[in-house]
Length: 253
Ligand SMILES: [Zn+2]
Image 1 (cartoon, rainbow, N blue to C red):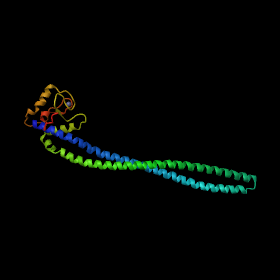
Image 2 (image 1 turned 90 degrees about the vertical axis):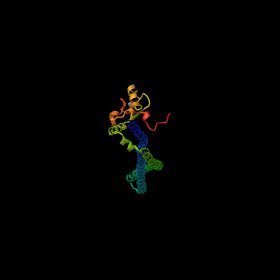
Image 3 (image 1 turned 180 degrees about the horizontal axis):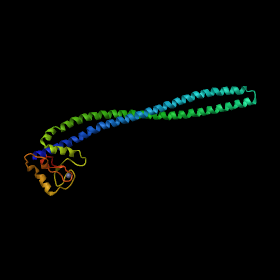
Image 4 (image 1 turned 120 degrees about the vertical axis):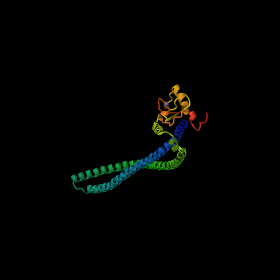
């Protein structure tokens, strides 16, 4: 029985060591993807800003063209006024001159406002371009670093999981099945390495009799150990393995 308990503790140690690597293998690509999304978002904003600037520029150009036409209209209206023979004609011509002047003043104000808007938009555009450039640089640097780290992690993980298959082979199938299921839990451990009166997985104080049984579990020698021969925590159901059966023994503190 001691051998299978040792194998179970070893399996847990391997998986626990690989856990950090598995986590990195999962989170690093996510981190890269998130950065790419940020860059894409900034690029989208930049495209929108550029379109806004182009739109304002087109509007300003059409207003400027209109202004030229209005000025021509004003000189036409003025010459017409100078040529008017009757009071009625003169009044009508004066009104036209006045109206055209007002329109010109309106256009000029509009163009000034558009210029101000354009300047502000160009400022935003420049800021966005700088932001995007920065975000791209950071994303590229971080991606390179993350890719290097991923390669390292893959190698390290391979080293850590050496011998895992043999341990799984050495354990009863039902135990492995239960262990794999327990391993998916977040709050509790699948295996609780017992060093004292408490379960290290859930911190519950174990019944005294169970503690004794856990310590003596290695002495039992069932013909073919199965899941019933393994002791579990009454609260969190982690497999209980006494520290004495853990190999190599952990360094004494
Ligand atoms: Zn427990």
